Length: 482
Image (cartoon, rainbow, N blue to C red; front, side, top):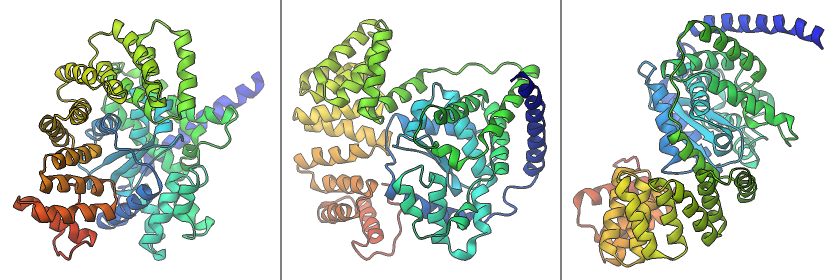
């Protein structure tokens, strides 16, 4: 065994050195030299996004999605000006995967988020994916295969990035009949792509005051999943090859960096912990989450955050009174934590205790007035209590503050409808269905809005949307986002 180690250590160092030399040379070449045009890349991305939304549950969560975008944008701030706007998305699936489409759409799965322990691991994955986009790795490969057609390529590339087989039937359906297996492989990342993305990703992370140790730790977790009886190779390993070489490279880089540089300041864990608790309590399988948290409660009965997490998971499972009990235990030790208070108020709402919900949520919102979810919960509570004007005010505040909060449009429409403000009611319901990608119901609601709306700007917007949806002839264009 010792003899084996004496032989392998120098070989590993040699591999790392050669990889660093190669990646350094490749990085000197402009990323755009061999790529399709920016316009073609954006069109490719648009088609891929349609397929991704069709086959996967891309979540619209007001806690997780803004947080992931915040970390991604912090890293992007270290880059020179980019030719397109990056956006970060989260897919609900218990899978270890992350990928980037052309033109800067970056996806991470809830399964991988749940496996992370801190913000640096998230930053590490995002930095790596940003580097793939920056180097235009996929667009370079697409350039060499353009002869088969852009639409076909979009389907193939989406399937490759999502991990055919490892990502289940949905990813397989994306590429079904699009291309032979040998041709599909041409669009997969190469070992050289991965090493270049790691080198640049580490550079981006360091400039953003993150340690590359986060990327190293999450890569080790992904690799270790194959060691403990997993039924399949993690999708990330299928779509991002050469993990052993990558781990060796980052380990060597960290050893060199730590010897000659001042330590990077620690990251405040609060924002990550809130997002991580959200993933665990809402998007991980109920039984898996319950089993894990029940073990933690036994090990750490004095930890208020364990009781808080347990309460959230119990509420999701429908055990509302038990959930309230555990969240109250959490509040005895964290009496002024507005996020625990907010979630307790929501559990009161779910249990039908609207007066208690209103009182609790009002206290929470006074401490975190800019939290859109707190306003949303309070708006829903006021709606149930018949306080329609206040409900509408709260829900309007939510969509102005966070336009991506899709559910708020639906309940705002409901509240306005009960007040006989039919034009605006149909308008906001139409926006809800637009954002939900429900074309049929969007057309129905928007056509009704057009019959009742008095606001000229809203009427013009509705006409544009209907023209785009095919619900009415109109030459104007709109992005459909409201």
